[in-house]
Each structure stands twice: as C-alpha cells, then as structure tokens.
Image 1 (cartoon, rainbow, N blue to C red):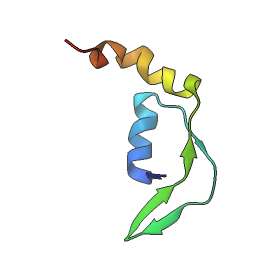
Image 2: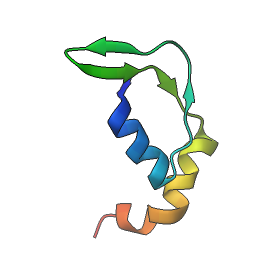
Image 3: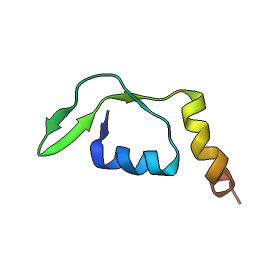
Length: 55
C-alpha cells in the first residue's frame, strides 16, 4: 500500500504500478494498494540508475 500523493510522485519518476484493490482512507490520507513488476520498476532505473550507485 502507498499514499496516493506519493504514488503520483512515483509515476512522474517513471515507476510503473498497477492498482490491485480499492483505496482506503487512513487518518485523512488515501492509501492505495498497488503492485509493480520488474519491468515497471526499470523505468525509474533507466532514468536514474546512475544516481543509485554507491560511490
């Protein structure tokens, strides 16, 4: 599950996700159940992978 506002940011960054259920409100924050495949995550790493490497 992920907060809906963070999910929007993740989509902009290139994470491909799929909603797998109804959203739920927890303490005035919408939480969405999602999943992502390796292919969905690779969109992010293809753009920002160099930033994730250890120095």
